[in-house]
Image 1 (cartoon, helix red, strand yellow):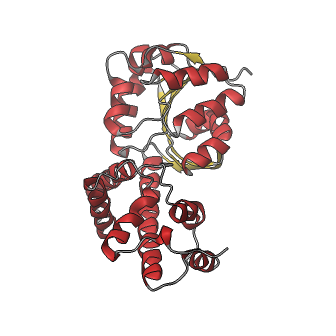
Image 2: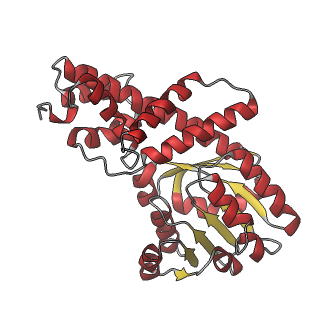
Image 3: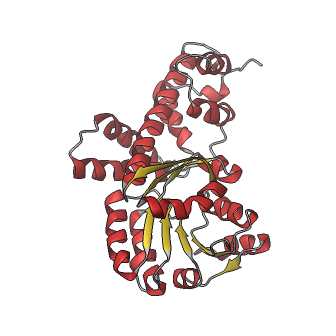
Length: 302
């Protein structure tokens, strides 16, 4: 059986390496992005270019989007010149963005009469996971549509889970984003607490990582914190967006989320200070400001 032809829309921090991995896995991939430079990078790797979402979808068996927010996905999927205009029976639409799962359900409902199935499949693992092809993929959709998507998922991720019907992937990803935001906030507060007390932060991280406080967030982000290199793997702006989505989704299902709401306000304060473009591990800088200490400049032992 021939590999499905892929249309990939959205070549940001996550989307570009994901599309590249699909090319390397042998898929025929057509890419579209608002920034043409990123398209040309993928063309050099063996992808084809498309001038619009409609063009990317027109020859594709599977269309994938990796976009910043719900309105972006809705526009690309249902707007003029979008995927809907190129729809044909038998196509599969996989949205791998982090958006409001209620919007995913709406898009799926509008595409279904055209014979287009949808899977919502947001990911976790950050830029490194996207580059390495080790993402955690949480998918929502009909079982048969999940099975059709599996060859694509296997090229992109390591932990692939069918969560349930459409929208279940999105709700799971938002739960993930609560945990990550709260974890990074706690890490920042704890390291500033230790640094202000004169504890060596590198030794502190080593000790914490070996106990119950250890986490993937601590493992993957401690180097950024110690070096002060907050070049974004995932921007504060985008995590703030996700925290807003979480508030909306929580209201829709009637769940109080006081901890996530508090952390959202901390991320809002960072954006007011002009730090929205930093990696989300940069939440530590807010605690540094409050305590008058920089963890990164404390002498660290080897």
